Image 1 (cartoon, helix red, strand yellow):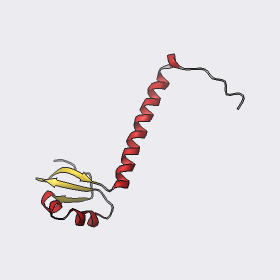
Image 2: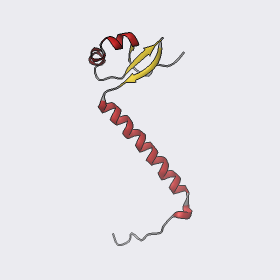
Image 3: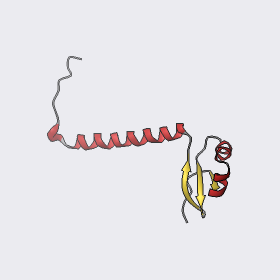
Length: 83
């Protein structure tokens, strides 16, 4: 059985009837839209989507930093004593 990653779930047919009503009823929470009782897609409001994208970008930046820190051959020595 597939895990549904949302507190609110609706059928595809219910979603197609009135997407705006589904969004209102969800009250800012993600909605799993189901097709044959499996998540076909998730509907999220723009602020949550933006937060998700920001988190993914931060995670990628973190991985990049770790990769660069591991490669000491490209390190540049600097003197920050004058600060």
